[in-house]
Length: 173
Ligand code: SF4
Ligand code: SF4
Image (cartoon, rainbow, N blue to C red; front, side):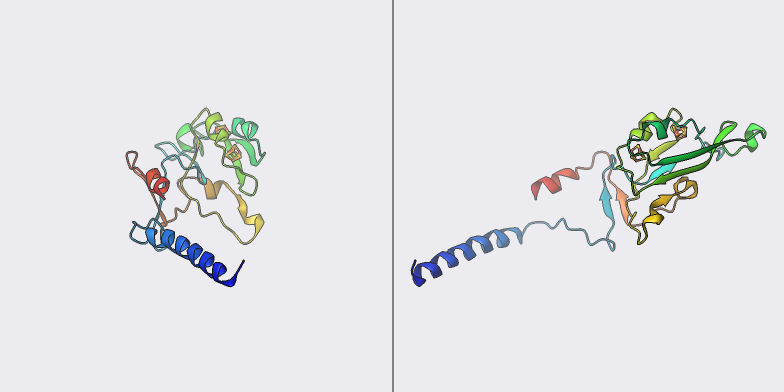
């Protein structure tokens, strides 16, 4: 192939490539300047788990181990204990409660089986997605990290409204 035809072919390829680039410039940007701008999370998003409490602030978990049994990653660790105090003074809604409730996020695959298995609605997925750590051991979250009354929520996200069409923004791109 001559040098001339090489130049012509290369020029055509550059023009074709740049025409695609330029065609995107007038379109609306969907890049989020995280963390300056909050990320929009889908209502169905599965983030860090939340352990729930009742209206009296008592933990809903009754340490039945069903979540741990359903977990395919074997990453839930529970130690059950008995709290013989009067119902209104107890840590949990039942005499039996989880003295220790750990989830190892180094193993969790966010499948949601634990949430489905819980008969007490004691555990759900929250929206917290900022789980990065420098040390693998810090991926082990304890009850204090998971309880809804204690878990620190990031200001860097907002949850989309149920009727908000977030998906199509991405489909368009
Ligand atoms: S989301 Fe899945 S992998 Fe993670 S703790 Fe629950 S059951 Fe286990
Ligand atoms: S979170 Fe639910 S399923 Fe797991 S031990 Fe507690 S009550 Fe049982």
